[in-house]
Image (cartoon, rainbow, N blue to C red; front, side):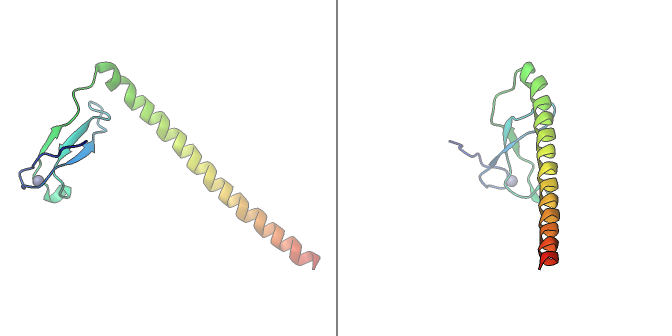
Length: 97
Ligand SMILES: [Zn+2]
């Protein structure tokens, strides 16, 4: 269970995840206000990551993002195909009437 800290604003912190090259997937406490109003408070929640994790995680994330992009493109293509075949089917019904 996450136990928030108190930031310089006097508010409970929120838990976020870092996706930087040096701390991929490492969670940290930070101010709950939007970035432009933030007091800048932050501190790591998770312990430092081992060098092997720091090396591997960015590559895994890139692979996941590539697979998701392909899946999204396939879904869009499927939608376009459905619209096309629905239109063709509608036209053929009209012609046969
Ligand atoms: Zn704050």
